[in-house]
Length: 260
Image (tube, rainbow, N blue to C red):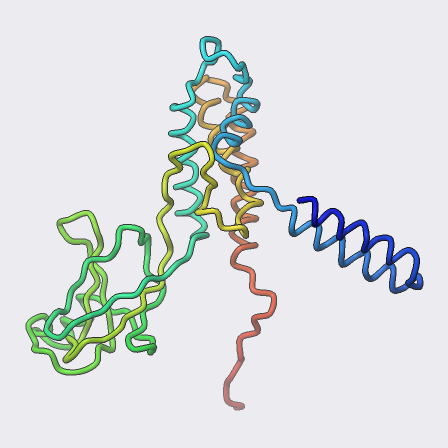
């Protein structure tokens, strides 16, 4: 907490004590406590994660000559941990905009995309399809001329490293497309880097990286007990993370149907 925030908190507490009745004091104190909690969420950077990992695997010497694991080795496993967590939980979401042109039906997707969740053409959502479904509709769909606004898109892996996205029917003019997607994790290169693109919602889950990394290093040290212990903690927290980040407390889907 910075100095200004601390001063505001002290003055707020004095005001509560001097001027409010008991019920109002209780309500405001609860509010201030929750506000302090959510604004005090602490992010771990790569250097801090590595330090915690060293503590967990009992390799905390400050003398590199006495360390069993080098910084670069631990950093490698830290990035592997981040990649696994992102791929399992789909915790990093993003979007980017693309302009599609007349006569061009296929485009290369940016390499930050893990999987696509939604596509809009001119602000209208379109459905995903597949080669098999398009083949059933027409044997010549992939050579058909530009005709109208695309109503479907399809994804495939080309001979290159990036995914491709295609549109059907091919656009007859230029359109603005927005692609919503789950991100790939980006490796942390510096000790000041924060996991999960620095997303504040994910601060509470930085410790999972410590647990996964400690479990792998313990396993390689043939410490099966600690490897199993840390991995069990990691798996339990992954389940909690998946439930929490996908929980929508204000979402009530409409139930519709006809009476018999």
